[in-house]
Image (spheres, rainbow, N blue to C red):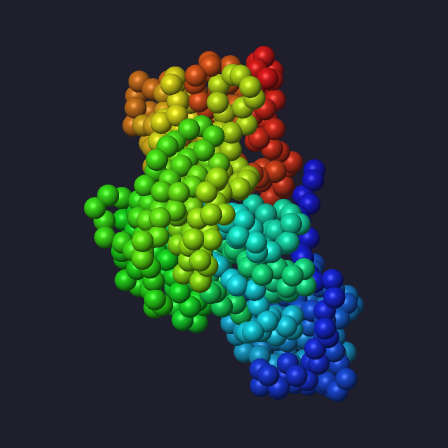
Length: 513
């Protein structure tokens, strides 16, 4: 089975940095001779280590990275950075050992220094956080930046973009050495502005350390990731870390979720506010003017008489709200609103893989594949599909294994409430029993709507075919969860799989184009 993971991206040409300068810059004690020693990279993982790297040996959950020191040296590490426990574990060493307590807390700054990502030498950085809409807002930001003439970069759950080059992502927000290497590669390619999707976990795990964003945005907060955070307040606080002077200069906060004002109150940087709700006081106001299966039009009113009309090639008012947030962030960064309005008057030229992505041909029911995997995402996307559907709405979904199980009943209840026919299947079971996950979902859906037409079908390849076999012209099928992903995680194995292709194949097999 294919378990391939996209490679770490680094600049093609790195200016070597003297290890003695690193010791001086970070005031590190060391053992060994540093004179003349040069580094061309930095790594915390021997699987990604390259000749000329500094290997950072850190304490982990199960073991200490110091145990991999010999392997790192054999792969070409020129020096090691570790804490006192790691140094004791390493003992005598063939390369210099630099001492740094709590190395993870300094890893981002170390990587930024090694790769030359220093103030005055950086593209404009935009960071977006929130439960839902981070990816969409980031893609829309990048699209508008391209339309106003910028050379753009993007790092998101789905993809990395570097001046037109597209690479599949490894993580929503990579570890700080990979992130800093990615930014350095973007700089090398002449990128002038970068849109970065920032998860709560990335902030908690210090993955965006060493970066300072020019403008950050907050989309919303809803039930998710309570396997990582004990309460919603703790989850909110983790995301609010992005809105501190250490990490950003300015922010834009969407007030559309019930946590919007609470998030604004936690901001430690100047923020503008935006809303798509009537009667809510905010700096920016967005109104949807048309919703169709292929696009959503909107008008955005802002400070000083700003009035921008455009549309997104996406389904749903929530997608228009993401576009409004992106525009407000660009204006806060100093872009001329008049120039933006002119550039996007014909629409925002964006393709968002797996975000309410319509995979239907010329005929047949409309089939949408979406990455949403939270109760709030289901609520918004089902409402959007319902608005453009004349017939019945079908919902196909499963739930992640080994992830926040507390949200599963709410996902099933909202799915049941929002559709006419429900097909429950598998997603990423990981190391859980998929039948047990499905039972939880089926039980919750039946409790919510006992008379709803509900099917339990495994595997998902069969589930989408079941939905398509029941649907007619005028109906819509929303397949939520897999989105853009090209694999399923089954007992730790990344099994090749494409929901988009499975949906297209199901339509063809049922006689639709």
